[in-house]
Image (cartoon, rainbow, N blue to C red; front, side):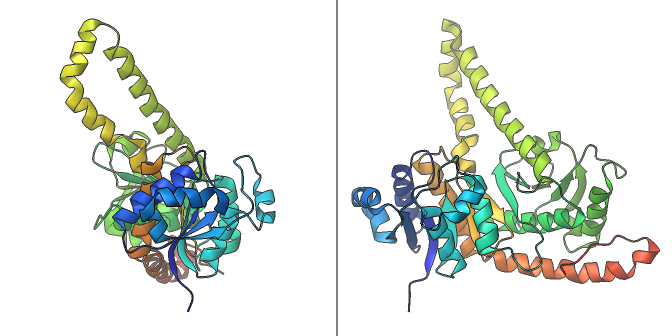
Length: 357
């Protein structure tokens, strides 16, 4: 019987591959001694690195890939590259050889390959990109972060169900609160798709967790544990937040280097600033997840270091171990039952959610 690998890993994706990838797997192998990785890449480059990291070497089986999907390669070209490290890793998931894939490579290529080769779960109209970020009350999950520019009510409801399961699986929350990102918190705000999605979520099994509409400032405030939106708004919100964090960091450096007294102040404030730096460390939030696919797909930031890549592997491991996709199927089944009942009330003006055809 062939080996069933926990994760397939693209060794060649990212700005600092394959060195950072192998070093990250060494950290991940120590955290997850039960895991086995199918590492896909140029054997001439990867084998010497594995020899320097015995823990990674013990946990990995190396498979050669002759090609690499570059950051500037278009998705259509990536689909033709059948011998690339990313393609071979994704094929391993589609063929049942691995439960999931982790890569720091080209995001557009990954999304195209995953949608076409791994395919979506039954009942999912479109996959979504989810990520984790900091807030005043702890970590918050947001989706979609750019996979779907335009979304209807069905998409938003599916995102909410997937976000709920993701928050339970990765953040360990027992009843994560859910909010729909809107231009105002009032019930009459937003377009018809948002209002329809809100009606369906209120009536669903996640109704007790549904907070309602939230605004942009609620993301950082941690008003809800899960923020649901279309990919256009989500991507803008994410990059705005990243820019704000960089601005804060730059301003703090300028303030504490502006004078001798400021430098002395830094020494006094250093313990607190170290805690702030740890809290806002982007490596803690590395690992965007493509939800709604027939397998776990995690995208690491291309410029991350070994610790950041290990965190992306942690996210993938949580999803595999805690049966993420099985829980998604259960949630979708409950929504399907609800939508069937709502469809019967269509002529009475009740909310209606189209089911998969």
